[in-house]
Amino acid sequence: KYRHSVLAVITTTSCFCPRVPDEVDRVAKTIQTWNESYRLVNESEMRGVGISHVVNHAYGLQCLATNKLLNRACTIGRVD
Image (tube, rainbow, N blue to C red; front, side, top):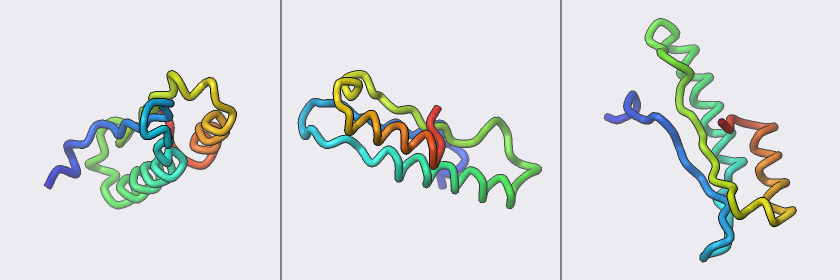
């Protein structure tokens, strides 16, 4: 019902409770795959650039593991 209404997905790598970052790499890959498949099927209807992926990485910058996670997400999928 809302597939044409989603503007963005927001994930976070924050250090606040529960102190486990979102799976930003899996989300990035999922969004990229969805955008590519939707674009192939509905090229004439595609407006803009598809669903965006915004990552709140403000406090994650302090942690090497979350930096690697975000880098992986940028490499394998979509991160805006």
